[in-house]
Length: 107
Image 1 (tube, helix red, strand yellow):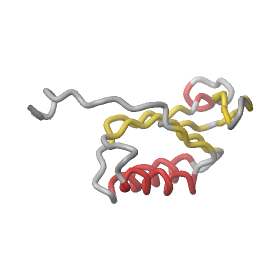
Image 2 (tube, helix red, strand yellow; image 1 turned 180 degrees about the vertical axis):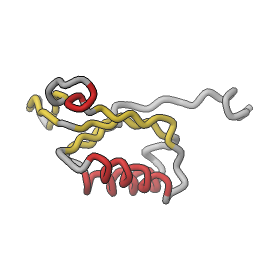
Image 3 (tube, rainbow, N blue to C red; image 1 turned 120 degrees about the vertical axis):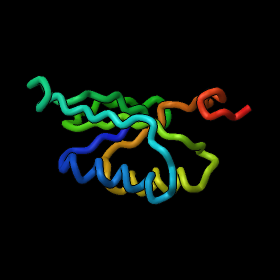
Image 4 (cartoon, rainbow, N blue to C red; image 1 turned 90 degrees about the vertical axis):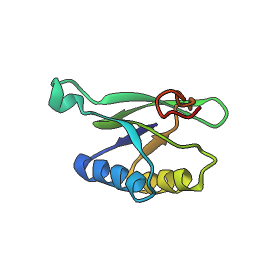
């Protein structure tokens, strides 16, 4: 999942963690990208695809990459995404993948 926002980076990070934690959903990755602070470069550019081929390149000073355990078929996941959408300008699911059954002894 990609989450982009314009300001108050710490508030958004805490809201993201809270949205998943309050629903007992595990985060497997939380990566914070803030190029202005880390390397003095400009904002992160994200290609926003909307509807029928409408494209726009948008600039964001703060971007989060989040991996979590769950399915879009789970209402807890959808509720978490809804909460995150309320505090962020841009939220997109990049894709899904199955967990390795050996990691959690799911055999």
